[in-house]
Structure formats: C-alpha cells, structure tokens
Amino acid sequence: MTHAPTRPRRVSPKEVLARLGQPEPMIRAKVKDRIDGYFRHFIAHSPFLMMATADAAGRADCSPRGDYPGFVKVLDEHTLALPDRPGNKIADSFRNLAENDGVGLCFLVPGVREVLRVNGSGYVTDEPDVLVRMRTEAKQPELAIVVEVAEAYFHCGRALIRSRLWDPASQALAEGMPSLGEIAAAQFGVDVDPGLLEQVLEDGYRKLY
Figure 1 (cartoon, helix red, strand yellow):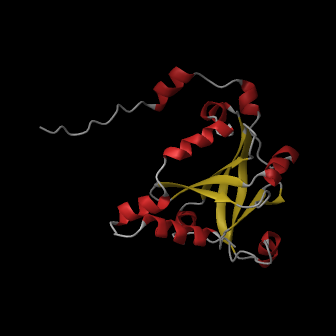
Figure 2 (cartoon, helix red, strand yellow):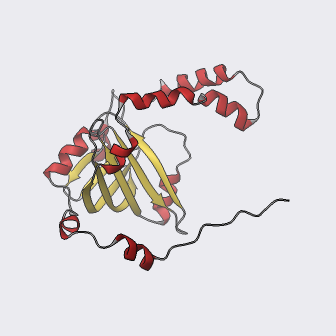
Figure 3 (cartoon, rainbow, N blue to C red):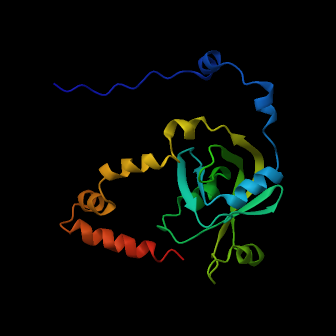
C-alpha cells in the first residue's frame, strides 16, 4: 500500500516573527541604498555570485555567475553591470527580467566568510560603453545585465562557517560524487561512454571565452 506524500505544515509570517523575534537596530542600520567604498572593494575582489530572479508568476530562478575578480562593474553608486558570458543559452534570467525586474545578488570572495547581498531592479543592455568595460582576453560580451541598487549590505558569515566552504578538507566531499558525464548518460538514457561525455564537457569549458 502506498501513501500519498504529506506536505509539511506551513508556518505563517506572524508565527515566524513570533519565533525569531525582531532584529537589533544595528542590523537594520547596516542596509544601505547605495554601493559605498566597502561594497565597491568587495565587488572588485569577487569572482563569483549567485543571481536570483523570478517570472511574472513569481516562479523563482537562481543562477551562478563567475569570471575574473571584479567582473561585475560598478557604474556608479546606484548601478552595477554584469557581463553575459557564454553559457547554456537557456536565458532564464533574461526572460524573467523581461517580466519581473526584481533581482537579488549574493557576492562571494574566496576565503572571506561574509557575503555581500545586493537587491534591486534589473534590465538587459547592449550599450557599447558598458560592454567595452567588460572586455576579457580581447573579447567582450554581447549583452549585460544592469542592476539598479535598492539595498546593499553584508550578510554575517554563519552560513559559510557552518558549511566549512573554504576549508580545504571539505574538497574531499567531491570524491564521492559521480562525474557529470555519468549523470548525463543516465539522465539522457543514452548508451554512451561517460568518459567521452565528460571529455566533451571539458572541451566546452576550455572555450569559456
């Protein structure tokens, strides 16, 4: 006999606030409406971020973005620009921003426990003066995402401390993971040598730019 899966109980926002309590005034005060010098410095050293968007119906998507440190450009204290580098061409973020301009970014710097969070509105541009600033190895992106900053603040390092993300010993976790070639062969249901698929993927990674 099979049982239908049960959905966990939904906790109301009122209950959440009752359990968590209110943040300290200093926590509220750390949220800025612009990119100050400390945020600018962090962004200049960040090679990786996660970008969250949602479509008109509120269906959310979060995608990784990475490049050389400082790949995100601070155009002014209220505006950022992210280059669109070659990827899987699914373009979920682009489609979402066309329907709903809300965007959230989490910047990371290797070895730093704190995360820089930036929230605001975004849109796609092909402005030459913006794209030329993102030229890498004699190539520049065809498009960029402009983010108009509404909030910016540092998030404490508890999550990265708990995860041990920057601890070299944590890399041992990768030893038990199947290769992407094995995963692709199984999920696509194809009788292909996983090693061959892995090589195809590696060749693609070498053509990042």
